[in-house]
Image (cartoon, rainbow, N blue to C red):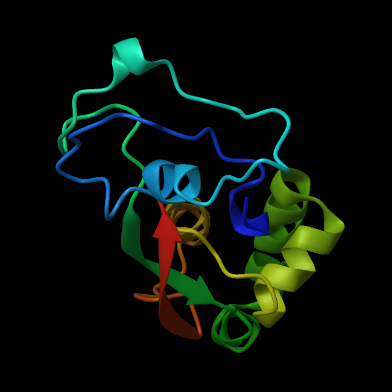
Length: 138
């Protein structure tokens, strides 16, 4: 089995209409005799179409990258309060990685950070430095 599928539950469902797009079915096609054990989805849960609860496919996600500009756009007091809130929520390393842009910020985290900025009564329409789109497995 290819390394990229080692930790993925595989699917052997026959006649599936979305097998060519499904990560689980693609992984199943890569198994060999050297693979002594497999992690499999319960075939009683599969539906052989897009409505399958086990369907794992690529989706494009818009991630934010960095929020360094906030420090210059907010008063020191407000920025320090925001920083403390985000440090308490994310921890030291994740906070600084997200702030610098070395860790992408998920849509969920974007909402959290944007709300925290809004709660500081900062008149900032977009707290993030830039955005990137990436395909991720759903």
